[in-house]
Amino acid sequence: MTIYSSRPVVLCLSGHDPSGGAGLQADIEALLAQGCHAAPAVTALTVQDTVNVRDFRVLDRAWVLAQAQAVIADLPVAAVKLGMLGSIEMVETVLEIMQALPGIPLVCDPVLRAGGGGALGKDEVGYAMRERLLPLATIATPNLPEARILAELPNGTADQCAEKLLPYCQHLLITGGHGDEQQVHNRLYSRDGSRHTFTCQRLPGSYHGSGCTLASTLAGRLALGENLASAVQSALSYTWRTLRDAEQLGHGQFVPRRLPLDFCS
Image (cartoon, rainbow, N blue to C red; front, side, top):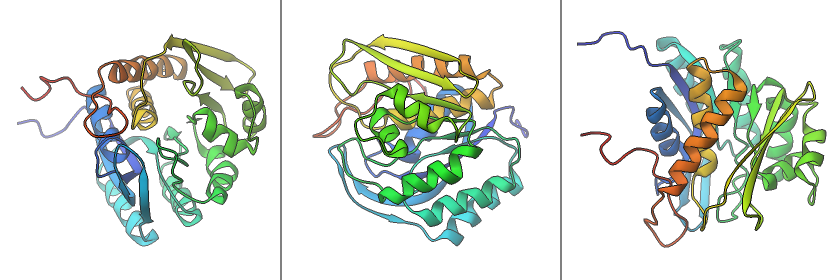
């Protein structure tokens, strides 16, 4: 029997999606696929399916703190992944949690809209994340619509949003795929002025939980000790494969297949 695990532990602060396509289940599956151990702390409960979000409830601040503190006291956290927070109070809660984890990589996925377009928090939550959380993050991973909300540029390009947001964070990965281009361009911006563009083939359809999959995979790669640019490439490549193999389990978006069919065999 193995008593001590060599798998890096990633603390996930995310919402619960009962459809299993996004949220904490996406985090857990993606981290398992990287050889990491997910420690999921629930920040919010949602009523959603693969079509859209219908309602959500942010958990009490004390409950979220208690979950995270129990993990931190017991497990050697190697990275933190943020997903849905849903309120300004939860932003402040994360700030308190991160005080106990100095120097630990933090991947911030600013979940502000569901894949179907429904809001997962008021607009001021995005402002609070930009002002308070992005300065702590190793990297933020918004898609272009989320980057526009964070940058307060409703029609901004990725470059314009990055120029507005880089004073707040060290690294910024703005993902593409929201237009009709044949090649998806995912752009990594760094405060030192360096830029990298990662392109991939555009896949048909739309997907539920792709952003969660990417951010949690990236947190896992950083927890494993991979350098940032390589970790981004690894996370993008893995996420693309999960979308290529995705299934339409319900009546809405496709759900990424994050684990192989023979994973438990």
